[in-house]
Amino acid sequence: MSAIILTLNIFPLSAKCSDHTVGEVDDLIGGIVSYKLGQSGAGSVEEWLDNGIAEGAGKTTDWYALTLAQSGYADLSAYEQSLLEYLGNNNVASATSREKYALALCAAGSENSYITDILDSSIGEQGMMSWIYGLHVLNNGYTCSRFTADSVVDTILSLQYSDGGWALFGDYGDIDVTAMTVQSLAPYYHYNSEVSESVDRALDFMSRKQMDNGGYQSFGNPNPESAAQVLTAVSALGIDCRSDERFIKNGNDLFDGIIRFRLSDGSFSHIEGGESNETATVQAYYSFVAFRRMTEGKTPLLILDNHRQDTASSQVTEAPAHFETVIESPSAQLLTTAVSDSHGTTFKTTRTTSVSYSTSVIKTESVTIAISSVSSSNKTVNIQSSVTSHNEKIGNKRSYKPIIIIAIAGSALAVALIMFILGKRNHKNYIFIGIVTCALIILVMITDIRSSDEYYSGNKKEKEKPVGTVTMEIRCDTIAGKSEHIPVDGVILPPTAFDFEAGETVFDILTEAAQTYGIQVENKGSAGGAHGMVYISGINYIYEYDFGDLSGWVYHVNGITPSRSCGEYVLSNGDTIEWLYTCEIGHDLDEVYEK
Image (tube, rainbow, N blue to C red; front, side, top):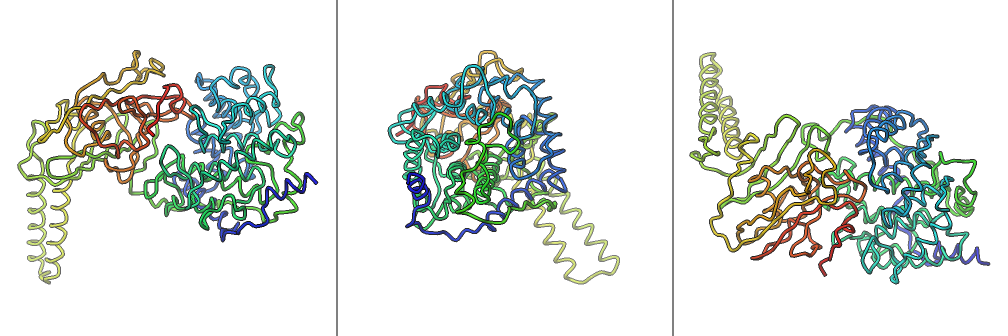
């Protein structure tokens, strides 16, 4: 009887079915794989595994490697070797990252002792996420002296909040952390009544937090990653979000909440209408694969097909029997042919060790100027779109534009004269020359090419109509001195006063500081706009994820962490701005969030 009740709870009889088909999900998976193949220049998934994914081991490709392993690609030997080399050459400070690498090695079928060696020093050492990832490793049959899977489960259950969720800190559950916790507890759902009760409360929490469009928001921002985590969690439990009424709102399910962030090239953006985002893309990818594994009656995403078979318990490594009888579908097929890169002539926002791309905005008296910066190990060139006069000056240099315009006009005149001499006197030829000439002149007028020295002027910007003063500082105390480009005292910019004009944002001041004091800033956002969804991914060549999965830049205003993007936070006189690097999504900074 209890089994029947559980099955009814997992598959409500009154649920509505959405119109998303398994074939559509296969297309979404294939679209992401094709996008990555095109991005890496690989002709097949196998080639991608042996080259691009292997090269990114330990840095950018670990989740792709794990997900491909769970999609049926067995040979991850090149990736395994590369990851082991990375671990041998780097001291991984983050406990959660060590556990993630252990999972990746397990997915690759590795027998290396790293998987078990790091457990005693990692489980529970970095708060909630290290309990979650530690349990994932234990769920795959590995053991350590300090903890058992049961003891970690008990600890995780004890950390559940009264609202049914889990979080890294605070008094209320967080949707992402709750979903990831459920993923780790899923193998015990049908065998442990305490886990069942706890997970049911978490399912109610996740259902309540779902928006009418089927998606979720985190820290006040709608995003696909949160919905992807929920999809991965419910799929681990055997819940089909297309037919479970708890995860259908206003006719929209979790797929609707994720797909609206999909871009035409098959990748996903972090914000609706934004640029391709690697984190959003890979999380969407593995959530779709998690769903397909569920429809095929396979184990959850993080019960790895290459797990240690000899010691893993059957209740953890086998999918519940009802998966096979309730849901049947053909196996998913990933695209393995290369596609042309539709962004071949445009810059990527993906960071590499040698090249980076960033977009920012600076306001002048009369226009808003969008700046794109391409940085390499040798130089930085900034291309700035604006409307300027012919007699403007850049630093101490007179503008190059009149010279270029004269050269363009002279060249056009010369071409026209040659055509006249050769007898090609059709008036359409001269109209075409005129159109091209005008287009080139307009292009010169609206662009401004500067060297790194010219862009980082070292001169404080004079505001025509200041309405007040704010103070800003940039610090990375949590990682002070851990690398040669990280200040020993953690101070990148000491408290510094900036005048501001009406309507200027936190991002405006950060951009001004970058120009004035030569501080590298890399951001992602809606067309790079300063007054919209802007996400700072790197400052002073310190990037998100450099020190673990939970690391990155956050900002405070007057000691409070705003729920808005820095491009949306309009400043007031006397505001104090802090940019801080966190290794635990703010938990290590004792953040106070805006209500």
